Length: 150
Image 1: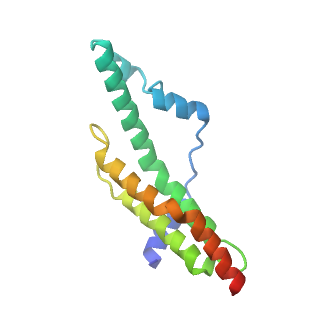
Image 2: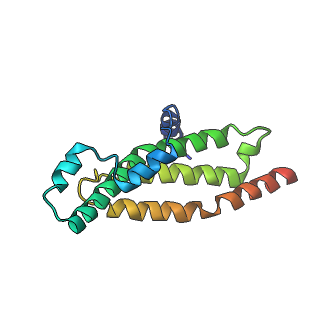
Image 3: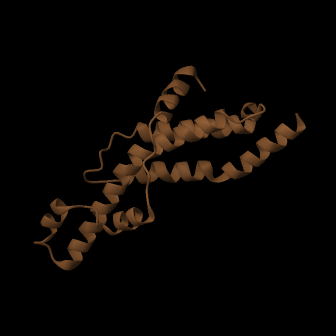
C-alpha cells in the first residue's frame, strides 16, 4: 500500500463512526425516516405505486448513508489491523486484509453517483466488496498461523 493511500485512510479513520441502533435500521428500511418531503410527494399516488416509490426512496437514503459511512468504517479496520501487537500486523495475510479494506474504501469513494434516482452502480460495488471480504475470517486465521510459525 502506498504512503498516500495509507495517509488518506488514516485521515478517514480519524472520523467517528456513526452509531446505528436496531431501531434506526428498521425505521430506515421501512422508509419511516424519509421525512415530510417524501410523504408529501406520495400523497397523490395510488397505494401500490406509493409503496414502490417509498421503498425506492428508502433504498436511496440507505445507499447515501452507506456511501458516507463505509469508507470510515473500513479505515477504522485498517487502523485496527495496523496496531495489532507483537508484529502480527506485519504478517502477509493481515497486510492482504488491510489492502482489501483500503481497496473497498477507495471503490466507494470513487462512486460519483449521488443516489438521487438510481443505486445500481452502488449495488455492483457492494456485491464486489462482499465477495472480496468473504474470506476475511480465514485470512485472519492464516495470519495467526503465520505469526505462530515465525
